[in-house]
Image 1: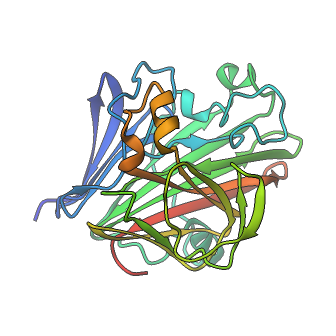
Image 2: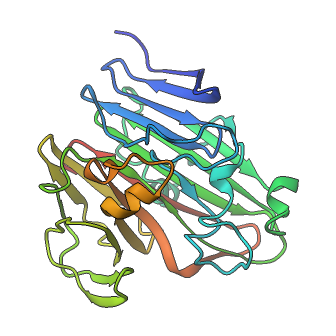
Length: 305
């Protein structure tokens, strides 16, 4: 049987890393933004990547899994930052994966590494270090690391932020995951019933009903249901979505027909084929003391957790 493989490739002119497993599962990550562009499992693409995305090495890419850091949307402790922060617009570097030391159960739990198969999977990390490109927006010094863990039927993405400054680091953010849905009219998202819900379109606070159904534009923030997993159910089957306690919220978004047409980097019918289910920190900032590290992950799986 062939071994798992990680290799440097180019996609749409951008340097990327492709991860492949013997069973045919694969993932593709652009060094621009450490942006996950593709996850293929059981012969099917699981992430939505807009065919109108701009791949110029400067603009944010539409679809896949963008890294929103150091703020979510315009919500964050720092004035003047671009929408969703700057991490998705900058070049990251590919670096070796650093595993928790033996016996460090707390670190393994925080990264979600417990239970992932070392023999059948592969991992790769990407790093963004503060410097002139980040300090034009934000004076804070930091080191952000995105680690991809690919195993059969499963993709886990972990964001770690280390504070290398001599003052506390405060931020919001998200893993802004775009999932493929065969038909949004019949797709359902299970698992958020009873959670606190804020509808960003109407500014109404309520409790979520289960399952979520999607008719037109949808933009809501939920209290995360950890450790319970969510299930996106459509005509193609079930996808299970889990996030770590490090993220306090789950954001669910679909642009609807009007916004899809208004977005230059999305097809007019994009809303019929995708749903964002995001592991996020929206309302209250995460604070990391000098020398400290925060970690948060999201796991996508075809197998019931």
